Amino acid sequence: MRGLLFLGLLAAGSVLAARRRPIMTTVDGPGMAPTLLSGDRVLVRRTRRPRRGQVALLRFPQLPSGAPAGDQLLLKRVVAVAGDRLPPGWADPDVHGLGGEVVPGGCAVVLGDNRPASWDSRHYGFVPRERIVGVVVRHVSRDTPGS
Image 1 (cartoon, helix red, strand yellow):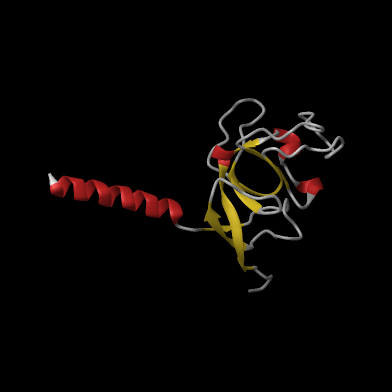
Image 2: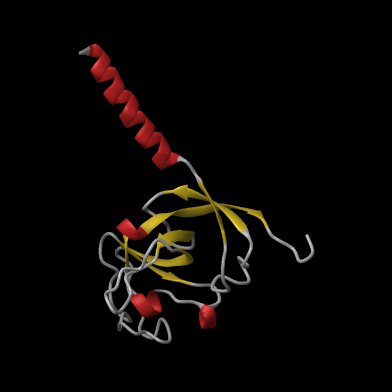
């Protein structure tokens, strides 16, 4: 019995340790330029509670068609968290009409730093906490042409 209990605790500890491991990811696309450029590598700390101003790694939101979004991840800046009121005219376009709304509990609003090239909360609305993987804690390297 003790052996089974020990193995159960060991397995639970292994799962928790895996959830706490940082993630190294490579930026792909112009949505966060000039802060992060395609080819940059960043270290992400796992959390589902980002703060305003942090760059968050999130699972691709559900597509407007309702089709599954797949396993793609996005890096976007958190501009509002639960309880924040978005000012009227906060973004253009505001496809979901979020201007003047209060961000609901368990959600965030994200924008790319390069707004013309970014697909973000202006297009898909509030981001539920379950879709947030973590926050960038360090810019590790930048690929340079010819290296």
